[in-house]
Image: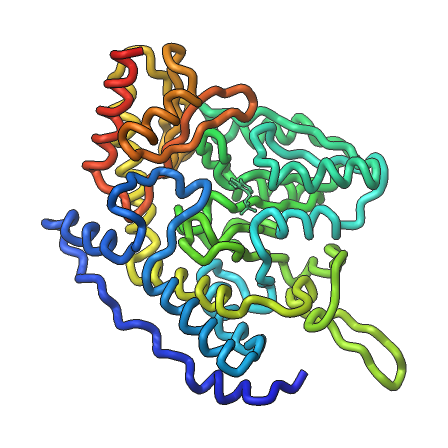
Length: 412
Ligand SMILES: Cc1ncc(COP(=O)(O)O)c(C=O)c1O
């Protein structure tokens, strides 16, 4: 895999942009958050509340990606060797070893690698929540079709974290092999008690996979502290990485239980003398072929940008704005908030509905009349609208949303 000129590319890596954010001052938090907002090329004409769908990237992330694309294109090199540094940065962020991290294209791909790779046979059971996103459920439904595994779902408990553990325990049988949950559910933003579920899975001998598409970059956590066996996320949502970036964690001690189903260069070695093909000892076994190294370096830059702000501060801000949205909407007659109230069960997404205006109409009118972008929730016939609040959002934007909904309700 020797690459001519790669060293020259590597030594010309641009230094990370100097921190451009002021020091956080408790007495003037909005000045700080407005400096954060100025780091996003996201149009000022748009009030963007759909980070749960796709998160905008900040300028340092885009600059890094563009600069690396240019440098690699200048020499027409793939830059694969540069991924090692990005792997260290992203692994540190998740509290795991670099050897446990594979760069994937999105959360769906990470979920699918685990679903297809675990050695399951007909009749083996998999449990996940009925609110799973298609990126979390389709990989298992496909295994149901291909291998005859049995899928069992539970309705998330919006009132009590322990209720979710109990619902999983109630579905568990001696044929249960896998439990999967969304760390934070996509339709209504329910935060799952993943540590407790991990404990249950350990006791019962089930593989525990976490779909972290909505949690990575929204709340701080360490994967080894959670105790799951695998975890997948997208880079292009709450982390603010480039499109088509993602990360897959597989616990080192159990990696041999997830066989890569697609493979190629970088995923292993071929001994020319003996003809023996060996998978890489680390999670690089799940990566293969030519990659977009510039995008992956952009993801590492997104992680650094979040670390510069501070993960606790990001989570607190997202929650604070979400609570403002919740309180404002809850005051409007006929509005029902579907996202649980208890802090242990929610974070930075609020889903609401009203019988007076269908969600597609509410969504379209907010967008057309006020340039406010939410996300309609049609899953499980919830007929609702989801609001994601992140670091580039402001209290004034939350108030504009509440006023917009109020006006539409009055004229409905
Ligand atoms: C919980 C969950 N899993 C998976 C996905 C799919 O993400 P991606 O399209 O990046 O693979 C989403 C997207 O919203 C999600 O919310």
